[in-house]
Image 1 (tube, rainbow, N blue to C red):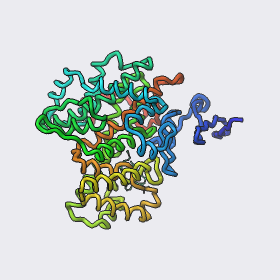
Image 2: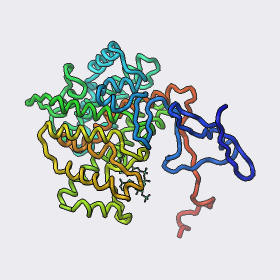
Image 3: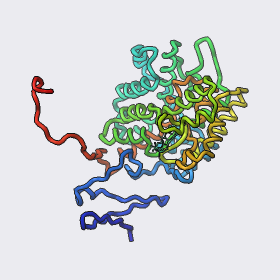
Image 4: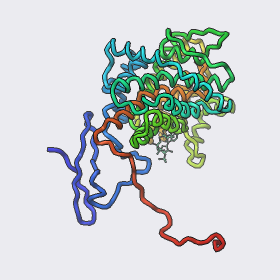
Length: 429
Ligand code: ACO
């Protein structure tokens, strides 16, 4: 028999079905709550609200588990590639050799942006943040692919996904080149997805560069580790926008904007800024930590804490190992890594952090790898966006294909002035 939850209010009882997920997660389905009681639930920040039922990603924040379509993140980071993982996330199964080859061919075929789009880059000031350019250009891309903005059949959806995934790195690299005043570099058909991105980022017409395979692999793993993370702020934004039946490109462009903020994808930049400040000011780590714990200082240890993980973020564990490996392969000794290690060592034993279950998240070490590779800081969040794209596409598709799909439209508890009469401007105090 299916479980029920009972709500008692004002002398009346109401029963609501309990939904049980495949990993035994439980939720009270309150779809009939307002119709039956006239009330809504209030959950500022949505910590207790399930916005959808999804088949894509499973997280157990207490145990530090993350799986895409059932596959543990550690196995994918170890054995898969970003492109194979992207296929898995979007289509639900690991691809066969034939499917992967077809997907790769589409990526190669669509790696160039329309030549007319190159002129759009000229309209941005040199100081334009690459995240702003990325969001604007993804939306612009939809104008050039009108048939693909609402990809109804599977072949069109495959093509739209491949175009977005392939071109987002071309746009990202071009945004960077524009910001430093260098000529835009075209992608090459003979390089892997990630090597191609590094090529477009670092090569110049007078400088051929082939990325170190260790660097290429570390960057590919960073993309894999960021590829989806269930209903985070940017993915929920993509679903929210997509629920109005807005097109795939517009929905993803909105996701880029949500990711931009320092409490979300922008945290990888905030971590490096924090570590640089400590390094340059010569402040001691214990002093810095005292400031963080002082509520009046309104400071946070960036790269620590997570809405869902109340344990080590499994991605952070992997990225920390990868950070050690890349720095030693490149022969780099970064003082910021030493500061990060000291901060972590103190924080994981400090009652303030222990009681609040604050552990390093994915952003704590990823910036140090990107710095070592030579990625400029204003591109860190852009790289996160490239990695997260498969998750956004898969979630948009889930909303789009769901037979129960309705526009996302939360309610509120109004707490403003009650009714009052309009006062002509001359009569106002
Ligand atoms: N440093 C110090 N204290 C913190 C931190 C932190 N990084 N994070 C949370 N806390 C404290 C809060 O002050 C609060 O303390 P209180 O109970 O005494 O008031 C308590 O821990 C709970 O914090 P909330 O803000 O309620 O936690 P929430 O789930 O809303 O926030 C978030 C999660 C935004 C990630 C937060 O931990 C944070 O700001 N971290 C730093 C920014 C960061 O690294 N963001 C990246 C997240 S991962 C990602 O988006 C890819």
